Image (tube, rainbow, N blue to C red; front, side, top):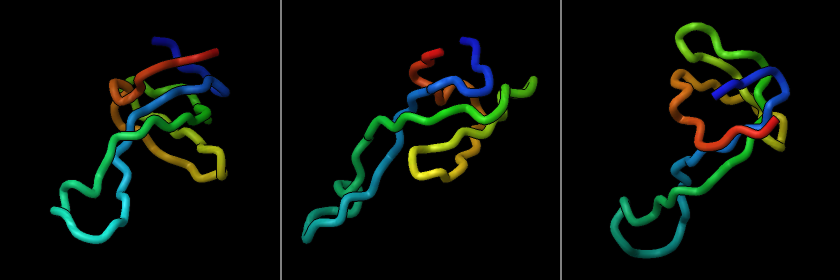
Length: 70
């Protein structure tokens, strides 16, 4: 999996949903999120990526990435 600067990636992240009642663990769902890589991964797989609102997310493990689009 090649990730270069500007590559679009897709990850699955656990999102909290607020609704009344239910167990705390039931308030989380897995949702896909698309990000743009800001730099190439270093030899340990660490790289930053930006989401659609401009926030930077840091990934320690390249195995978190589900899909790569050039």
